[in-house]
Length: 210
Image (tube, rainbow, N blue to C red; front, side, top):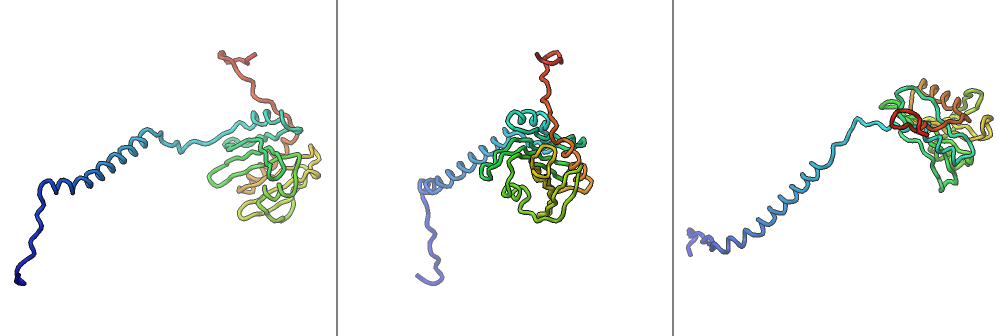
């Protein structure tokens, strides 16, 4: 064979070519079926309602919680537009504490919450304040709160022995403006030891159900 001669190109028979193409065709079919399945699931799944804002009924939840507590669960009257993200009776077994907890979204940048218990301990306070250090104190409605700071959050701690109204310990905190914090502190302190009742169920005619 001379240098000018080219190596002959192998020629495949028709049956050989079909056999070589079968694995490729199988892969293409598998991918197509998988994509169709994904698109079908996405089409059936409802779109997320990004405008939805949780708004728990704090008064109703507090009334239910009163059935299991020896104190009145706080249900503060907050400004219109504040949305309650949660209102729950929480068993913090790892801390040896059960507590009434409520959290509010005020706007895109502000969130405030409080936790109330009649069986506090230092571990619970530290957990609620994210191990925040004490930066001062403030008196609200005659009650002395310890002020703590942790990263970008501020907390107000009312120790049980400082609560001359019902003897519960309360931790408030979050991220908010000075005005929002002041409004929240006043609303919470005013609601201490105030009994609330769940809204009465209504019948089909709009009246109170018997």
